[in-house]
Image 1 (cartoon, rainbow over the protein chains, first blue to last red):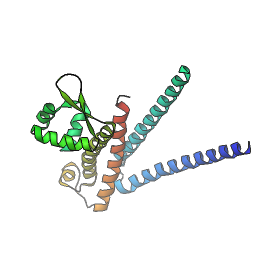
Image 2: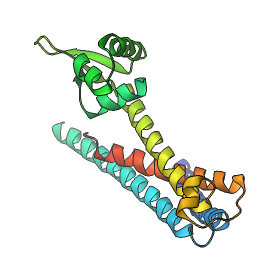
Image 3: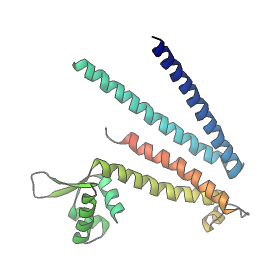
Image 4: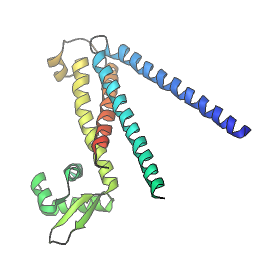
Length: 78
Length: 131
């Protein structure tokens, strides 16, 4: 019982750390673009960055959905 | 040349004749490269009853071909974008105004563009592949 609670708390802490680090990374990348690319062309790089994140997110979602569908269909067979 | 063979096989399975015609190479030369690729576990022979022998990518070969295609396209596109942004090269000077830039500026612009474009292309190919 106590072990389960500790596990859940650790998972929540890890998730919060993940969100913080991903947000920090995203903001740092935007700062790098602003500093190195300059005002005029920064939007082009920001478009590329956001496009890459969008495609990556869709890919991860696709994998998760297929995985879920597969487990549901295999459970249905049983 | 082996990269070209992998790219050609990424479209569909092909025979030796089709590959040699498409790549403008002699059959023995294509056969030699196919043997080397086969030894690496990237390509396999398919016999489907008739007299034709088809060559197909293995799972490892398919993954490798996707990486190569994404890298090549990303290299070209990021070079065009970085040179346009930083006017470091003749291409850039044609596209934008001429100004002083350091090579580190150009490198950062190139690397950033490469990473973003590579991720976009690679995962787009993976998204649209048949599952």
